[in-house]
Image (cartoon, rainbow, N blue to C red; front, side, top):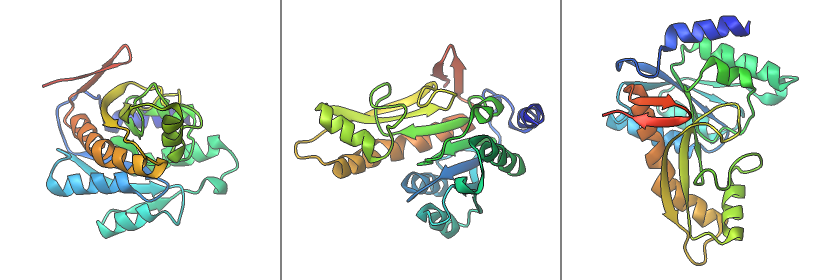
Length: 229
């Protein structure tokens, strides 16, 4: 089954360096969907290049991100982790959804559910994630949501930021596409810092990375991402 899915993925997704063409973007969400909204807004401005968000898949039926998608006329699906008895079964269902949606690019935008290595192997360098810190700082297991900003403030760093990277089998360990620094200000709370990182970094980096991917301008070699002109 895994080999079949991998072959199917290769058939319709092509190589990351192929000439620009219309690409189907699947966005994975779990919560409020602020990064999804940034992608929707970019699409409405024409800033995703040849990419189109064709489906939003949520791990929670009550995620407000689903409302954002429906308001934008984007089809949605819900795949609840608790409806599956293992990570492997959940990942297999997610891969089947990608197949049915003819996914060219998968974007994790606040997606809080773990998928197994089969997904990464089926879509090498075709899954993008945004992380609210400057990797390799404050990343990996346990660093998500407000926990990232709590750790940054506890460490007393003066600069934090966001990173957009390809997803591989190592948590937050995939090739880095882009990063942007954001200042930590006196009196910051995890909530105020989270908001500033989103506004100044995440909402700009993620749509730009998606556009570059869809235009075929990202190349990965030896875990390093290059951007062609």
